[in-house]
Amino acid sequence: MSSQNLVTVTPDKDNDEIAIVTMQRPPVNSLNLELLQALSKTLDELSTSDFRAMVLTSASPTVFSAGLDIMEMYKPDLKRAEQFWSTLQDVWLKLFESNLITAAAINGHAPAGGCLLAMSCEYRAMVSGKYSIGLNETALGIVAPRWFMDCMLNTISQREAEIALTTGKLFSVEEALKVGLIDETAKDKEDAINKCLGFIEKFESIPPLPRSMTKQKFRANGVQWLKANKQADIDEFVHFLKFPQVQQSLEMYIHMLKSKQNKSE
Ligand SMILES: CCCCCCCC/C=C\CC(=O)SCCNC(=O)CCNC(=O)[C@H](O)C(C)(C)COP(=O)(O)OP(=O)(O)OC[C@H]1O[C@@H](n2cnc3c(N)ncnc32)[C@H](O)[C@@H]1OP(=O)(O)O
Image (cartoon, rainbow, N blue to C red; front, side, top):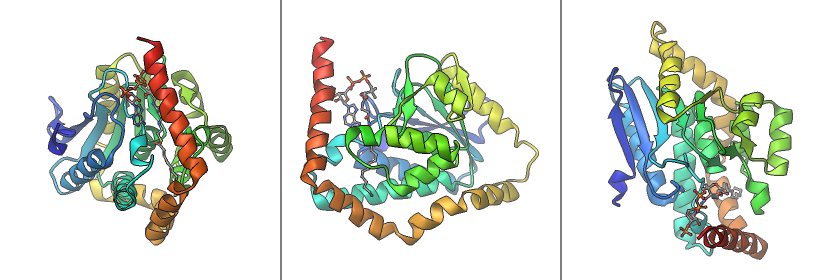
């Protein structure tokens, strides 16, 4: 699939000022460099378009996004790893600070980087079922960067976030609702999108500029650090990937994912 098709933008059928942004990198929307570049380009285009709101969702029937593509971190080409991390930073900044009203229709699992994308939006509706969401990095032997933590702190309490991150917790849908990691549950993807549209409707009579400026002021603390430390954060990521223990943990995790597949055959 060409990178142009990795993300689609469709106006909502009843309101052409709302963009339905769909990630479609089968099977699990793992965030590789090309999907991140497609997301980054889409966010640039939306920021200068007539759209005033967006709903982020996925074309997969059971996965919103499986997070970062582990193959980008396992035995990486270091130049590509730099570009990969820099693009992830850009996607986060563009989504977290977007002028648009942003909502996520989480139609399946959203671990790690998938959770980050959802938390970067202003509102989350998640389909009920045996899905999970959270920042599970420590369970994989890796450390979520500071700005992932800041993003979670914009969503749930510091205490819940610290316990969740240190234990690598993946929340069930019900648990996520209880701590406020998601705002509502939905019965299916269509219902999740409708709930996002309901959230967007709240701003019908609010002028867009003061709205987005207010949002950005709330979010400024989280983004200031990354803006001031972008290159240091990239260097830390690349340095981190060079540790043999990190590569071993990733190898074991990849093995676990593949053997899980074999077991169910
Ligand atoms: C600056 C300081 C240092 C910073 C250090 C790094 C910080 C890194 C920050 C974020 C990290 C991440 O985002 S890591 C990714 C974390 N993601 C996960 O743990 C999820 C892993 N996947 C799953 O649990 C499941 O796949 C699923 C629940 C999402 C879906 O399950 P399902 O049964 O539907 O699908 P399969 O498990 O059979 O998977 C299908 C297929 O996809 C491959 N796969 C799954 N996830 C990933 C992934 N994240 N990256 C790459 N590939 C993935 C899986 O292996 C299967 O592949 P094959 O069909 O080839 O076997």
